[in-house]
Length: 317
Length: 317
Image (cartoon, rainbow over all chains, first blue to last red; front, side, top):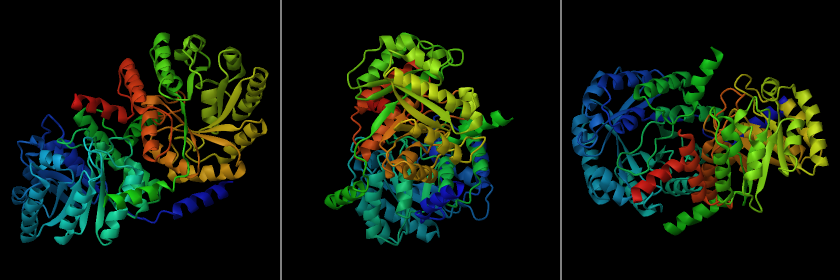
């Protein structure tokens, strides 16, 4: 029977066309921005250095936003100056305006920025209307080009928000057109408050991929309703191969109501490995980073696999 | 654009053939068996009565097992005598031997029993080898027939265990053949410690459904590695329409290492509704039951949706 079972497994695997996935690790930025108590700069640096040794190829380290609103990331410059940089790892940061780019020059070669497709949340988060954000984005793009920084553009709240759960498809397309028109090829689609599901993920992605077959879409799911990995599966079926996630399931958006953490990196990687998809990440090392930060923050973080590992270590010792 | 979006949503939905799902709610049995402190009988009764008013059609209320091993369910008879029974709701219990059936006579019309496909865990959980359990099951079956009790048979650890992660397919088939030979048409397949994934769920189900196209398979997933709902999706693709789950994500197996709770009923129902699948359950009432039991047990239970609801209530009030 084992042979028959293996045949069925191979048949099921052969339906999955994506063979390798790039994970953009957001834990340091998504996680620390939510913490009420200031996390020591030295801890941030140690955590990022640990993540650098897991095989992750992309780490969003911090953000250059107003320290009045996100005090925990006020040490962005110091963190970026002091981390050990591994070759082949991209160290990126988030900016929401062109002042942020000024601070980032000479410290990073990759920046991310995002505009919310929901007008209300964009005002809360970016302190601007969508139109004003597009104007600001022009400045961001210009400064990045002038300073040889690669910019990735995002669209947030693509699947709506708790207060307005309809998919704001016209705003999504307007922002998407703007990024493409400005030469941006990697575009992040964020489900900021966990509204997306298996069906709506596929529907939105189908429209966007039809419109721009050459864009690399990066999926950014929050796990507010437990559908994070289901939505990853929907994306894989549409041949998406870049995903944002946060180790231990850290994170959330400080200005969006009901936003739970990102999907958890180590759980995502375990899932991808069960689909025979290569991630180049060492799962054990990543779990060890997850347990490290859970101990530091001294609260139970959402990721599942790390708990199992904790128990199992006890069990076999 | 809204029309195009709706067309894509309809197209995606049309791939899902299952239109209605029966949930077997296991929270009272799975949840309380794990609690170290005795939960008052009156609380159990109130909790079950609440669940009876959510639209759930099947509730596993308790188990008739040795009170020495599961002291928290030693009040099985009293609970079953005192709950308010709604018409059209099945109130079931678990037994692991024929003595359990003796205790259940006149108290329930539905019993569940299960045998582990993993020899080691069967010995730990059922205190018997698999062969001995099959022998005992013959007694259970006979007594159920004599007493007009409907018996559903289970196979546990179908996808292996942490200590032996290979799928014990030969044992699975042996136990399956036994149930079928004895006239049992509803057969539960349990992933006791969360080893199953999207591929292996499909592979095992394909083999079993090929062998017995007329059996109703009931899927019982634990969410130890976060793949619970992904595995539900795999099962739906193979047209499974009965699922076990526990409100708030209660539960686990006291004798199986690393077993996290069942998949969470309200998260499952939210997921099914996003797929346009009917469950006949009122999600708000179910969330209210989940928050009730979370408050009583005074610890954060795994389900996601209930937390969101808590936050949202605060937000809009």
